[in-house]
Image 1 (cartoon, rainbow, N blue to C red):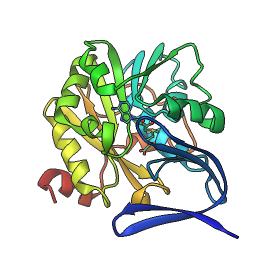
Image 2 (image 1 turned 135 degrees about the vertical axis):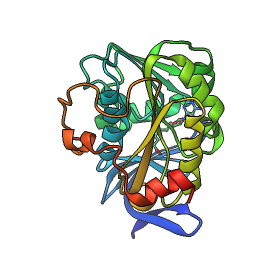
Image 3 (image 1 turned 60 degrees about the horizontal axis):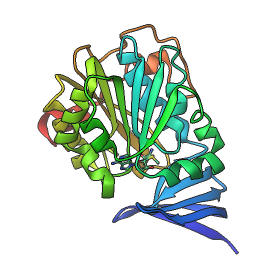
Image 4 (image 1 turned 90 degrees about the horizontal axis):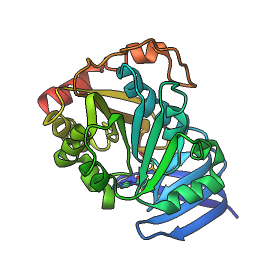
Length: 275
Ligand code: SAM
């Protein structure tokens, strides 16, 4: 007998994968959490029916959401991650020798625990002495932080439940104040095809506060449409590499960084004309 997991990515589009084992199922105070074993993508973390990461393709997302903003910053030392309970974002940030501390603010401790147990290739950096995990709401945390961070990364779930506010102008205002004077912010902003309005809204909301705002794009096979966006804001420095790009990943390279903000015309049109 075969078992399949199907994610309805939009009301008219689905991704289906064959499952060989259900490793964990839990209702947390915030969401329904599952870790499953699949043939095509290895282990998968699922929250409220939405794929968060898979062992096989997670590097595409985690390398883009971290290395692009970290190379825009001239000397990142203090980094904040909001969300990202699987640990993939923290793992990539730790590859930057200038980083002295990471405050990892995740609302749901159960995601961190499940990732430590079932997703060791993602969560392997969470016990590093430079990392402090804070189980609390990232919105309240940044509202109460002033002038501390060099880079803030918003590695959130889709805009539902406690993540809705993470895409708002008010929240980007808190992030602006929580950054030092040459601070940089990066937020995952969904699929330009499946969630065009959300990308446009986040881009406009970030521009309310940040003088420099750009979008970078990448592949992400298990997210809706396989094509993903990251919106990056800077308080002072230009959106380009502001130090030597001396790190290569499985996807991220110096040439990816050089072209990171060079967008295809249809995305430029969307951002400039709202269509
Ligand atoms: N890469 C994934 C994606 O784009 O779908 C996101 C991965 S990560 C598991 C997302 C995390 O954001 C979840 O663990 C969720 O609990 C957390 N989260 C949602 N809202 C939050 C908030 N307000 N503060 C802190 N963490 C939050």
